[in-house]
Image 1 (spheres, helix red, strand yellow):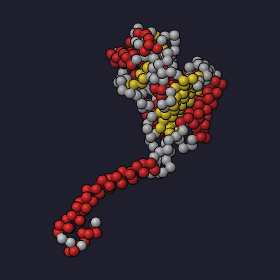
Image 2 (image 1 turned 135 degrees about the horizontal axis):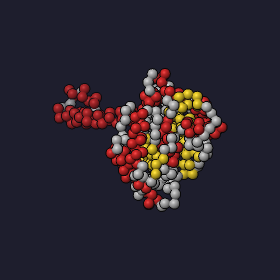
Image 3 (image 1 turned 180 degrees about the vertical axis):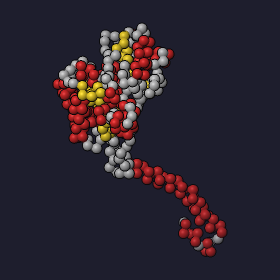
Image 4 (image 1 turned 120 degrees about the horizontal axis):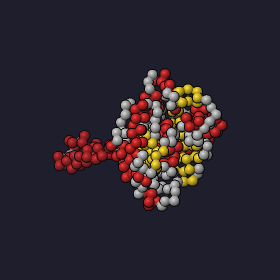
Length: 368
């Protein structure tokens, strides 16, 4: 049809209009749609070609559990029988032992044997003030920010989903060094592409309690799945869901790295002491998160937490049906440092009741 426009002399004007111009106009109208469809099809093909290949999270979980068990063996053999090796920033409230380094090394080796291309962020090699020439808090922020940056090119057709392993080899080192059985290894795995925690493992080697979660697959304690809303005592679920602050067991963090956090924590203790069923100060964030997930503790508030303190536990609490926010009431991420966590056995009203008390008593902000 297009060829006919080059033979105008052999056709009348009317024949030209009918036999050539109309088909030409139709082509002009149809071509953009055809071109758009072609471009869309090509884009879908490119997206499929360059799509990140998802990882096998069950395999990731098995490696995380294996690493946790290996570290747990070291912890069992040395807890209460080991000297203080060093102090972070010369702070006598923030100690390091030889087992911290040994546990982190065995965890890292176990991961690298199976996933040599994955990124790793461990507490003991992430907060050296001499490396960053700054405070441990700022060093931790920088270390997390750097670790979350993707390192692989998306122009390759063989790109796998990038994972970041965030590890606290011994959370609760002071308890560990003193022989108190409230310390854990915490291993959280983050997808760099989505920014979400996809696997979380917390292991207390003294209690031999392994709690884990894979995103969208629930939370398990020693292989038994926790029912969302499951309570820890003889209360029925309906009464547990209506737990108010006056009936709640609340853990308050008491971070000793700086004076300003001790001030707000002290205010919180004073404000909450007569408004709750009871307060606890278990100085091991991952252990507390594990127990919040199990409804042994109804809520937890703390300040200036690091990613390795909360990464695994945040996913575990979420998969158990709990709720996590920062102290402004916003949904928290692993980059959040000040948190309120409440268990699945209560309504969010407890969460916000707790937030209101903290706000009214000036427990939200502190010198950083």
